[in-house]
Length: 309
Image (cartoon, rainbow, N blue to C red):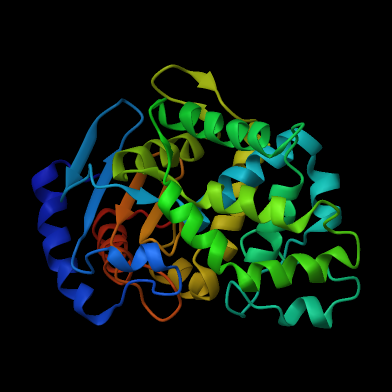
């Protein structure tokens, strides 16, 4: 069963919107503090090109940690699975996304998975290019391909704000550098990573990305393969096991779809072989996920039997 109209989606969105009062916007990145905590919007994109929406879907958000899925796909295409997972593990963690704990406990300091900050930094380090700008342009071009929107760029304000406050991410990089997980200049890597996180798009763009992953790497309207099926499936696996920070197990149980969240309030979901969904709600729960966005996805999954389990 599928959601049949924007009116149906809007009805559920208005119900979920009540939960925004229980969340707070991210405040450790100064530029993100400007978001309205009561905003909530969503778009659903089907393989036949049908798009349903509710709320202000043109409202922009930055990718933040949702970018980790895209850079993982790009690094896998650049380097291959063996090389990537020589430096990053496969296993979920119960720790916060910016924790340094497992790097201290593991020897060598290998991140547990690509969806925590340490793992994402190691993955971005593997993206090929002769300099930071070329590597960033490759990431941005990949986003253009996935969304079909070549106008997407990044927020210089958010990137600058993140760069100036990335103290923990710098610590993670230096910790990994001692074991050769990262070999480049830390400041250059942080510059690239903060630009990647600051790529700016809307719910419709997120839903378009989601449907490509839902269809195992094929853009359904054109039939063009944008990434190999095995890489798309591997990325979806990480979205299930690690995509919602250390609430991924609960999300898998209650919602049951591959999804990735970001601290700007975005969530990108991919219901296998059925649809992509993009949600934006900047009020976060204590684990860093959009509190109303998660509730909306839970209601949609229950009503339309989206769970893959």
